[in-house]
Amino acid sequence: MTKQNRRIPMRQLNKVETLLLLLGGLLMVTGSGASIFLQSWAPYVFAPGALLFAAMQMRQRYDGRNITIRRLRRIMLISDVLFLLAALMMFANQANFFGMDFLLYIKYVHNNWIVILLVAAILQLYTSHRIANELEKESQ
Image (tube, rainbow, N blue to C red; front, side):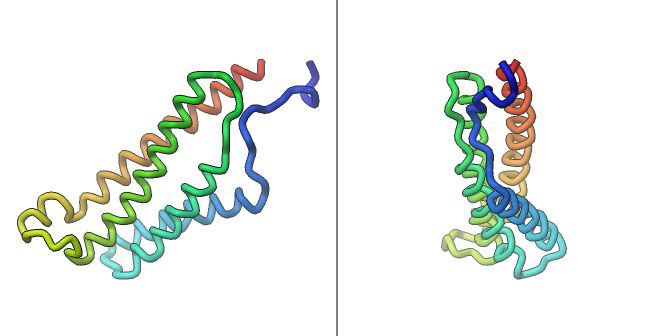
């Protein structure tokens, strides 16, 4: 079977979508980095980046039958939701808009967006490498 006849079951992003994905990642890095330096505008940069990144990853579909890749795609979508939750927690970190008691706020909200972001990033890293390996195995 030639390369031209092979059907790629994973939908690839076009150039604009790829640029939007990269822009979203860049905005997320900028927003999280600015938050370290206590910049008040950081969540306003991180949140649109997380939305762009998650939306572009959701546009990538897998139409094949490999159960492993399907499972990895679900894990990747969970990490996208965690990125969005981290953005919400960044906003909550600026002001106690949940109306919680101060001690509860410190315990459950204050800077916990970092933990959520770390878990999401680890899941992204794991799934992106595993999906690439599985697609390579599937194509052979």
